[in-house]
Image (cartoon, rainbow, N blue to C red; front, top):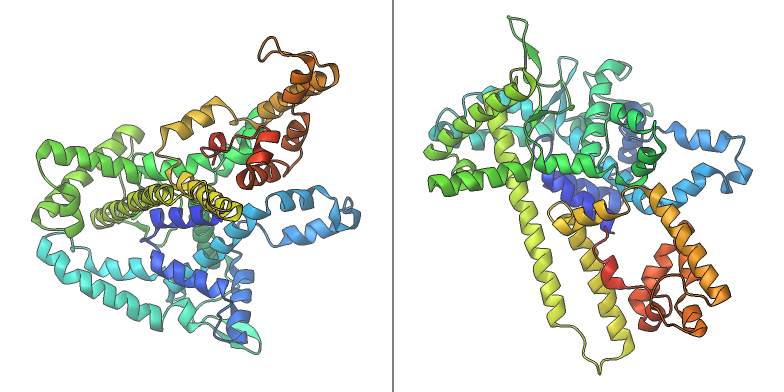
Length: 478
């Protein structure tokens, strides 16, 4: 549940360019309820998946697993163990991948045999929309109307059909892998930005060391999601839909991004210094907003050139669209944080009393833990305590495993001999044996063993006491 919710929060941070959050949520509903219009519609979706291969995990993966010489009845091989341990992560992410793919198809059409993004196609007609506040107000409604009309009449979702059981997209040759690959790359890159994924080059370098390789097991999602919020101006790998080569041989229309939080708080600082509500002005695109957007564009052009020695090839209108979209998404994320924090306070106010029955207390404890996990998911990149926890331990699973093994040896020795190794002084052998918890250390070392510890402690105070599990200490762990 928490992993799924985290994906929804991240979608809200990047939506607006290729699809809206509303479109994504609609497609999630279709997948969740299997609400395809007909069997033919469901069959076409399956064939779209096969043609475009938008999922990060290649379809041949399952076939290769079954063909493995180490299959052992398809139960005990390494791939199956990995799939079992990660099922709570893999399933929600695959669900999100398919919803992203559907949302991109809703906003993609075929023009002269080429795949075109509908939003970029329409906006390209109104390149001068940011020249003045009046220009923007006049063009904004027209852009929305044209986009919706093309989605209904010319998108791949609207025009796809089955002919003799075979998928057909009018105007597009599905055997043209160079063209279909554009949607494949866009879907995979968008998914990587949602769930967190390093570039292949960085992964290859980190795989060379056992320590950084072990770090990749659980922490490789941190950097991409941190970059989405706190990076400066940077070029992003996305698509070539809007890229053009000018008469001078220069590229135009490449994609860039700016960290949402960095942008938001930078403009907040400027607002205080200049005594202007810059964020509101930019979102409204009034006269002051048009002037500020032009200033921000010039500032980021200079920053990018200073950083890379290259000029910014993003058009002025596209850059300003990105700035406004990022600001809206950051405001939404801040709203989520405030709402979840308020819910935590409200839950504390209605906490059960000492006279309430055990079932009521356990139910409250469950809701409290679930809400706390959701809050940790969204506040992870804004909470200094989370960064401290990552730095203090658990960054490298290989090191953590060594620590857990040493604790197991220590507690087993205390359990057998009754001789205290560290800890409180003056304990009797009986007290030493009572304080030792070797079973807890064994469960922590066994894959998936930590989960029953946490759940048991969540619903039973006696269980938490017997196994020395402190829930409050675990609430800050993602």
